[in-house]
Every structure is written in C-alpha cells, then in structure tokens.
Amino acid sequence: MSTSPDVVSAPRAEDSQADGSPPAPAGSATLGGERRGSVEQFALLLFITVPFVALVAAVPLAWGWGVSWLDLGLMVAFYFLGCHGITIGFHRHFTHGAFKAKRPMRIALAIAGSMAVEGPLARWVADHRKHHKHSDAEGDPHSPWRYGETVPALIKGLWWAHMAWMFDTEQTPQHTYAPDLIKDPDLRRVSRQFVLWTVVSLGLPPLIGGLATWSWQGALTALFWGSLVRVALLHHVTWSINSICHATGKQPFKSRDRSGNVWWLAVLSCGESWHNLHHADPTCARHGVDRWQVDSSARLIRWFEKAGWVHDVRWPKRERIEAKRKAPGAGAGKNREESAGAHAA
Image 1 (tube, rainbow, N blue to C red):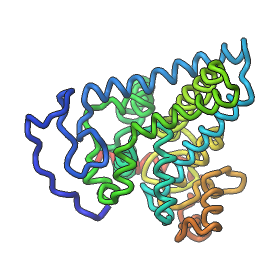
Image 2: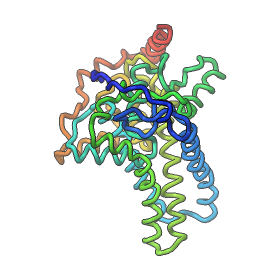
Image 3: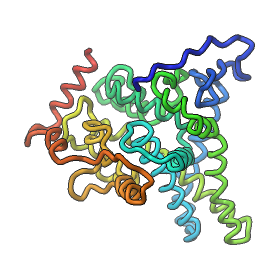
Image 4: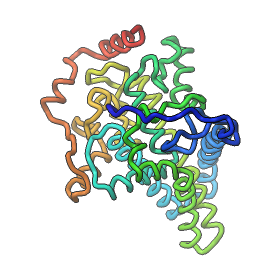
C-alpha cells in the first residue's frame, strides 16, 4: 500500500448518478463512488434479507420435505468455491500478499471470490486493509468494541461488526487502500463486473438443478438451497469473523487487538477463524499453525504451489511463530491492554 493514490478531479453535479450519489472516480474498480447511494443501499438490503429469510425457512423445509442429494451437493460445492475464493483470493492473496500467483490464477481467484456475493474485489480489499490498519481501534470499519466494553455496548457493537457497518454511507477510499488493484486492468474489470458474477453465482445452481432433473421443481429447489441458503450461510460465517472472532476466542499469540481463535468456525470459514495468529502475522499463508487446526485454505494453497500456479508462498516459520507466541500463562490480558492503548491513542 505504498503506492500513492491516483489524482482524480472532483465530479461535476451533472455527472451524478440517478440515486444522487457522486459518480465513480476515473479508473475506479467499482461502479459506485466513495459514498453508498440509496439504490445501492436498497440492493444491499435485498442481498442480505432475502438469503437470510431462505436460511431461516431452510430448517422447517428440510424437516418437512427433506433436501435432495443434488441440492445438497450444489450448496456445498458453491459454498466452498465462494468461501475459498474469499479466503485464498480476496483475503490472503489480494489483501495481504501471502503468495504470488500467475495471471490466470489471479483472475480465477478474483472471480471465485466475487461469486461469494460479498461485494466487489477492490471494495472488499480496501475495507479489510483499513481494518488491519486500525484493528479494534478508532477507524476500524467493523470493530465490536466500537461502543465500549459494557454488556449493552458490546451487544450493540457485535451487531455493528456483524452486518450494520455495511450500511454506512461512507466508503473506504479505494485509491488509498487498494491502488494496486485499481491499476491492474484485469482485476479492475472483474471488480467492476461484480453484478455479472453475482448473477452467475445465483443462476448456475438452478440451471444445473433444472437440467439434471429436467424439471422446474429441480431448478427451484436448487435455487433455494444452492443459491439463497448457501449465500446466507456464507455471509454469516464471514461476518462472524468480524464480530465473534474479535469478541471472544483464545489468544495464544501477541497482537495489538482482541482477535481470537474460534475453533468451531474453522471448517465453515475455511481456516479463517484461527484469527489471532492472522492478526499477529497477517501475511502468513497459513492461519491454523498449531496441531489439529484445520485450515483448508492453506491446504489448497499448498496444492496450487505444487501445481506451479502460485509461488513465493509465505509459509509459517517455526522461529517466527514462536517469537509471536505468548509466554505460558500470559492469557489475553496483554492483547486487551494494547488494544485499549490503541483506542486511547
């Protein structure tokens, strides 16, 4: 992030978008500007509530009518495609540079991450880089400690960190936090095509389900399970890293925030919930570094490396990991003190 942002002239009033928000800056990697307009906020609300309603309805529907193996297979396949696109692509590669990848692999990771329906590549990366710069301190886009440490404040903060922060009209400046992505024509194109990849992500399961069963019912059930329920589950698992993993969990490593390891989220988050090590060593390609810590993202990166698709992988080194490990009995106190100091600063 040492690259300075491009100079962009101020937008003219007549260039405003239909919803009143300013136009995207020249060369922007998203279709919106630096403020979230009313149309975009409404679309965001739909993308959150509709899959969530499907997720809630999934329990009684599965209990009453069951779920076919085809629907279950589509849900699992597209879930882990999108999840690994986020964890390996958006997060470990594009945000932190934990490894380098050949251009076709970079494009594939950008598309896979976009199919998780968590926002355009450049905006996701910019938000996350800002989060690491101000983690659990003033300026963090989604800290659960935003309102204080009392129980009511933490409940409010968890809601903010989990999903409410996304409705903030102020956007993280992409030219400041993601200039490398904006200047890459292929990645900028994928980022600006977010709506297209959303349609592909939501449309492929019912297309496959309809063709496999040769029926509209097969298409509809595949849409329900493979698209809506899958997207809702992935959203809430990802958002839990922002909320739950910054409010609880073990902290065996030194970090300047309150990030914790939450073991029961490890499989569904593809290894992201080993969050304490990640904040202690953000560029490390593996987050679950201790024995029995499942990290499917790191396993896939290893396979990609053996295939020659990625290189210069920053694997954890024993001496570096041990240097970041807390002394026995240190507990979480030191991390909390450092986080409080960062807030005070």
